[in-house]
Length: 260
Image (tube, rainbow, N blue to C red; front, side, top):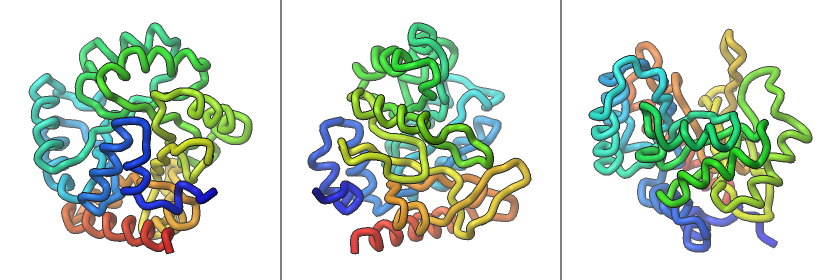
């Protein structure tokens, strides 16, 4: 059997059973991009400006909506408009981690109403499989998709070994799950997308334990599908559009090298 990582995004999109995964692969092919930008900013104006500047180069914009100090409904409306304008999906990096009934309320209601606008969200499976079922009850009717946090990119992280294996087992068994946050391809039992944070053009780290790996390490060697980049694109003194294009090109080159 040929590994899913040896198929093109177009081939995988054509065969994938989940409509959102098909849409994501189609966006990646249209834009020749496997780049997601992590929009870790604190105000509405910063988020919208960043989304507009990186939008042409990304397949997914990753948000932390709960850090936006001046969040309002207009922010969501403008973010959706930018997603349509630039042809990208929105991933709210909420990292749900509680009982199924509570996460249903957190996902579908509250101030943020995440399921109404975020194509993708994610969760820890520490509470058990009920968290997936609870999120699916809200998100599946809206055509949303879920990633499981099988690994993280920080030094000393505890998501390893049997815990990671349990993530894979649950993902394979639940149709609402479209993939993982992690550093590699985890299974060939079904086509699950891996998105990888902590990617830089040079392997390094920061003072708070973040570890950076190159697109070649993550995509070509490990079989991951989407690179997630934050400060490497919009840190101090950066030309945001130029850096986004540079990372997009590096991620796509790593993907093409994987197919050879």
